[in-house]
Image (cartoon, rainbow, N blue to C red; front, side):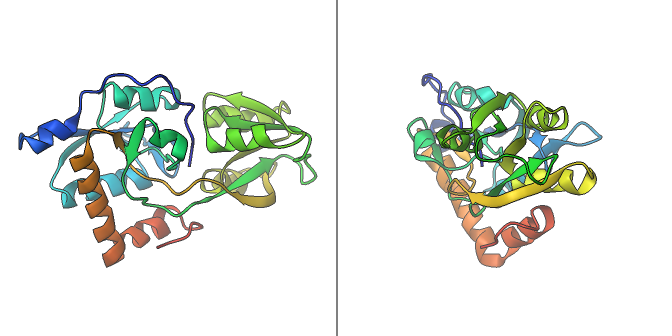
Length: 243
């Protein structure tokens, strides 16, 4: 669901070559671990959420040995390209901008609505100050709006804090992330209309890793065909569209 501001491309250490040569290799899945319900760190200090459950199942179906690592959002693409891990599963929307630097599996979610969260039902969404996590499709959307002022933060938690403390009139983010906050805090509510941006979430891989990309896509397709992907979406993202 997020769009990264692309850094300069770095030389990659591709898993594709290793897979093509038939050597066993642990595939490292990189995630942010800070964007529930897509991905978060649970009380045991482990990666959890929709993408953890999905990634584990994809690895099993693709017959891959996988492990999870976490990485800050603002460097998640550069560190994939430089070889720190092999796959990004971090609520990342498939965009043309990203495809200039990395490749993607088939999407494993439909485009999910973004929403505004505010402390007032009459928050100014047209010309007010709107917070968003930096390098996201929501930040890009606000920057293209006429009249609104974009206020960017490094983490999603900081965007919501800006609304709580009056620094921003509203925050724009994935509705699946904001809705539980609105339900848990009486002073916060979803306001305005939902906005559809992005082309669905996919697993990001290096452009050289075509075999790994195809293995993940085949596993995603098999989950779509047998209904298991829809079951995970209903469990973790109940307000999101299914396939």
